[in-house]
Amino acid sequence: MKLPPAPKPEELRGLALSVVAADKFPMLATIDGDQPRVRPVSPVRSDGFTIYVASLRSSNKTTEIGPSAKVELCYLTNDHDQVRITGTASTVDDLAVKQQIWDTNPLLRAYLKSVDNPEFILYRVDPTRVRYMREWALDYFDVPLT
Image (tube, rainbow, N blue to C red; front, side, top):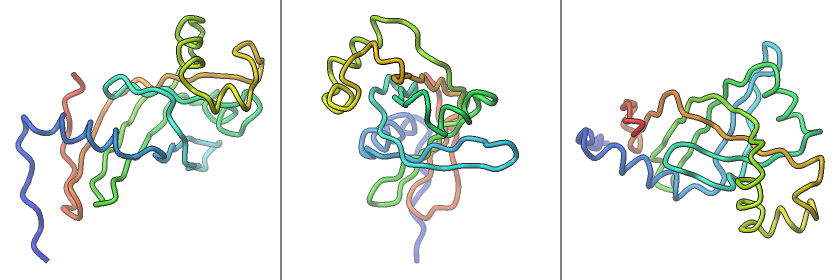
């Protein structure tokens, strides 16, 4: 099998953003004590590589993010191109941001009924590192954050 050519540095950001746009259910990794945990999530907003994820205050995800805000999201296309966003998750308290996301997300509205529901928690994952890998190339390339 012939490996695909390495992407050009000036292409990396665009390639990585296209992977993020294509994968609607990336995997989110957290830490539970000394045990990694991974689960699919459905981001509710993406601003470049800053990702917003809604959760329930009572979920295991919330319990795990609390003590260690370090997380990683892994996006994968049908062609196996991959993006890994390493970052820090923080709670979004800005009511305007929460309302904007609420207004554009019918699933949140159907499930939680009110933006004021105390179970509704919104995380913003701020990237500290982004890596891109083309299908089966086995080499990650660091992607510029901006």
